Image (tube, rainbow, N blue to C red):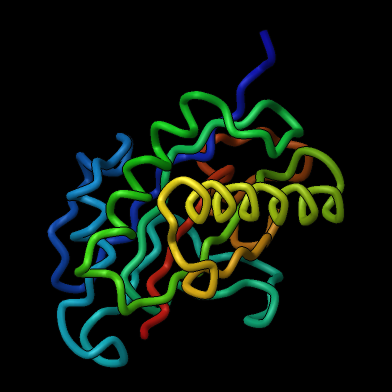
Length: 184
Protein backbone atom coordinates (compact mmCIF):
# COMPACT_ATOMS: atom_id res chain seq x y z
CA UNK A 1 0.00 0.00 0.00
CA UNK A 2 1.51 3.35 -1.00
CA UNK A 3 2.35 5.88 1.64
CA UNK A 4 -0.26 8.63 1.54
CA UNK A 5 0.36 12.29 1.73
CA UNK A 6 -2.43 14.55 2.77
CA UNK A 7 -3.12 17.89 1.27
CA UNK A 8 -3.79 19.46 4.65
CA UNK A 9 -6.86 21.40 5.65
CA UNK A 10 -6.02 25.00 6.32
CA UNK A 11 -9.15 27.07 6.23
CA UNK A 12 -8.96 30.70 5.39
CA UNK A 13 -11.29 32.78 7.51
CA UNK A 14 -13.34 35.16 5.47
CA UNK A 15 -14.30 38.61 6.62
CA UNK A 16 -17.86 38.01 7.65
CA UNK A 17 -17.56 34.28 6.95
CA UNK A 18 -19.05 31.61 9.15
CA UNK A 19 -16.31 29.01 9.11
CA UNK A 20 -14.59 28.64 12.44
CA UNK A 21 -11.65 26.75 13.94
CA UNK A 22 -13.58 23.48 14.25
CA UNK A 23 -13.76 23.39 10.46
CA UNK A 24 -10.02 23.87 10.07
CA UNK A 25 -9.01 20.25 10.62
CA UNK A 26 -11.92 18.45 8.98
CA UNK A 27 -13.08 17.82 5.45
CA UNK A 28 -15.81 20.28 4.57
CA UNK A 29 -19.03 19.10 2.98
CA UNK A 30 -20.51 20.62 -0.19
CA UNK A 31 -22.69 23.09 1.74
CA UNK A 32 -19.74 24.34 3.79
CA UNK A 33 -17.62 24.73 0.64
CA UNK A 34 -20.46 26.54 -1.13
CA UNK A 35 -20.79 28.96 1.78
CA UNK A 36 -17.02 29.51 1.98
CA UNK A 37 -16.70 30.26 -1.75
CA UNK A 38 -19.76 32.48 -2.08
CA UNK A 39 -18.95 36.20 -1.95
CA UNK A 40 -20.84 38.09 0.72
CA UNK A 41 -20.78 41.43 -1.16
CA UNK A 42 -18.51 43.17 -3.63
CA UNK A 43 -15.51 40.85 -4.14
CA UNK A 44 -13.14 43.83 -4.20
CA UNK A 45 -14.30 45.30 -0.90
CA UNK A 46 -16.12 42.94 1.42
CA UNK A 47 -14.41 39.56 1.17
CA UNK A 48 -10.76 39.45 2.11
CA UNK A 49 -9.06 36.15 2.85
CA UNK A 50 -6.94 35.95 5.98
CA UNK A 51 -4.41 33.13 5.97
CA UNK A 52 -3.93 31.26 9.22
CA UNK A 53 -0.29 30.68 10.13
CA UNK A 54 2.83 32.54 9.10
CA UNK A 55 3.07 34.58 5.93
CA UNK A 56 5.27 33.09 3.19
CA UNK A 57 8.89 34.14 3.32
CA UNK A 58 11.09 34.78 0.31
CA UNK A 59 8.24 34.60 -2.17
CA UNK A 60 7.37 37.37 -4.55
CA UNK A 61 3.73 38.26 -5.18
CA UNK A 62 4.09 36.95 -8.73
CA UNK A 63 5.28 33.53 -7.55
CA UNK A 64 2.75 33.18 -4.73
CA UNK A 65 -0.81 34.07 -5.65
CA UNK A 66 -2.62 35.69 -2.75
CA UNK A 67 -6.08 34.61 -1.73
CA UNK A 68 -8.02 37.69 -2.85
CA UNK A 69 -11.53 36.32 -2.65
CA UNK A 70 -13.47 33.73 -0.73
CA UNK A 71 -11.39 30.58 -0.45
CA UNK A 72 -11.11 27.15 1.13
CA UNK A 73 -8.34 24.58 1.52
CA UNK A 74 -9.17 20.91 1.19
CA UNK A 75 -7.84 17.57 2.33
CA UNK A 76 -6.88 15.76 -0.87
CA UNK A 77 -4.88 12.52 -0.59
CA UNK A 78 -2.20 11.64 -3.11
CA UNK A 79 0.35 8.83 -3.05
CA UNK A 80 3.76 10.25 -2.11
CA UNK A 81 5.39 11.96 -5.08
CA UNK A 82 2.32 11.32 -7.24
CA UNK A 83 -0.50 13.35 -8.75
CA UNK A 84 -2.81 10.33 -8.96
CA UNK A 85 -6.03 10.87 -7.03
CA UNK A 86 -6.81 8.28 -4.37
CA UNK A 87 -10.28 7.14 -3.32
CA UNK A 88 -10.09 9.48 -0.33
CA UNK A 89 -9.11 12.34 -2.66
CA UNK A 90 -12.14 11.79 -4.86
CA UNK A 91 -14.42 11.87 -1.79
CA UNK A 92 -13.11 15.35 -0.93
CA UNK A 93 -13.30 16.49 -4.54
CA UNK A 94 -16.86 15.20 -4.86
CA UNK A 95 -17.84 17.73 -2.18
CA UNK A 96 -16.01 20.49 -4.08
CA UNK A 97 -17.57 19.41 -7.39
CA UNK A 98 -21.08 19.54 -5.92
CA UNK A 99 -20.42 23.05 -4.60
CA UNK A 100 -18.94 24.34 -7.87
CA UNK A 101 -21.83 22.85 -9.87
CA UNK A 102 -24.34 24.73 -7.68
CA UNK A 103 -26.07 27.59 -9.56
CA UNK A 104 -24.98 29.99 -6.79
CA UNK A 105 -21.36 29.70 -7.99
CA UNK A 106 -22.01 29.27 -11.73
CA UNK A 107 -20.97 32.83 -12.62
CA UNK A 108 -17.62 32.63 -10.82
CA UNK A 109 -14.12 31.53 -11.78
CA UNK A 110 -11.73 29.74 -9.43
CA UNK A 111 -8.01 29.36 -8.98
CA UNK A 112 -7.00 25.85 -7.89
CA UNK A 113 -3.60 26.10 -6.19
CA UNK A 114 -1.47 23.04 -5.52
CA UNK A 115 0.94 23.35 -2.57
CA UNK A 116 3.72 21.06 -1.28
CA UNK A 117 5.96 20.87 1.74
CA UNK A 118 9.75 21.33 1.56
CA UNK A 119 10.69 17.67 1.02
CA UNK A 120 12.46 17.33 -2.34
CA UNK A 121 13.88 19.99 -4.60
CA UNK A 122 12.02 23.24 -5.18
CA UNK A 123 11.74 22.57 -8.92
CA UNK A 124 10.40 19.05 -8.34
CA UNK A 125 7.86 20.38 -5.85
CA UNK A 126 6.75 23.09 -8.27
CA UNK A 127 6.15 20.51 -10.99
CA UNK A 128 4.40 18.11 -8.59
CA UNK A 129 2.10 20.86 -7.29
CA UNK A 130 1.20 21.83 -10.87
CA UNK A 131 0.37 18.20 -11.72
CA UNK A 132 -1.76 17.87 -8.59
CA UNK A 133 -3.69 21.08 -9.32
CA UNK A 134 -4.23 19.88 -12.91
CA UNK A 135 -5.47 16.49 -11.64
CA UNK A 136 -8.02 18.26 -9.44
CA UNK A 137 -9.22 20.44 -12.35
CA UNK A 138 -9.40 17.43 -14.67
CA UNK A 139 -11.50 15.49 -12.16
CA UNK A 140 -13.92 18.39 -11.65
CA UNK A 141 -14.34 19.10 -15.37
CA UNK A 142 -14.81 15.42 -16.22
CA UNK A 143 -17.11 14.24 -13.41
CA UNK A 144 -19.02 17.45 -12.64
CA UNK A 145 -18.92 19.03 -16.11
CA UNK A 146 -17.51 22.26 -14.71
CA UNK A 147 -16.58 24.48 -17.64
CA UNK A 148 -12.76 24.32 -17.86
CA UNK A 149 -12.64 28.07 -18.50
CA UNK A 150 -13.91 28.58 -14.90
CA UNK A 151 -10.93 26.77 -13.35
CA UNK A 152 -7.26 27.76 -13.43
CA UNK A 153 -4.74 25.20 -12.14
CA UNK A 154 -1.63 26.73 -10.56
CA UNK A 155 1.22 24.96 -8.83
CA UNK A 156 3.08 27.01 -6.25
CA UNK A 157 5.26 24.20 -4.91
CA UNK A 158 6.75 25.05 -1.55
CA UNK A 159 6.11 28.79 -1.92
CA UNK A 160 3.43 30.11 0.39
CA UNK A 161 4.02 27.63 3.20
CA UNK A 162 1.20 27.58 5.69
CA UNK A 163 3.63 26.39 8.39
CA UNK A 164 7.21 27.63 8.09
CA UNK A 165 9.67 24.71 8.15
CA UNK A 166 13.32 24.18 7.28
CA UNK A 167 14.19 22.45 3.99
CA UNK A 168 13.45 18.71 3.70
CA UNK A 169 10.85 18.80 6.48
CA UNK A 170 7.64 16.86 5.93
CA UNK A 171 4.65 18.92 7.06
CA UNK A 172 1.19 17.69 6.08
CA UNK A 173 -0.42 21.11 6.60
CA UNK A 174 1.74 22.50 3.78
CA UNK A 175 0.55 19.83 1.31
CA UNK A 176 -2.83 21.20 0.31
CA UNK A 177 -5.09 22.39 -2.45
CA UNK A 178 -6.41 25.93 -2.07
CA UNK A 179 -9.48 26.94 -4.07
CA UNK A 180 -9.99 30.69 -4.48
CA UNK A 181 -12.99 32.47 -5.96
CA UNK A 182 -11.41 35.05 -8.30
CA UNK A 183 -14.69 36.64 -9.40
CA UNK A 184 -16.85 36.52 -12.47
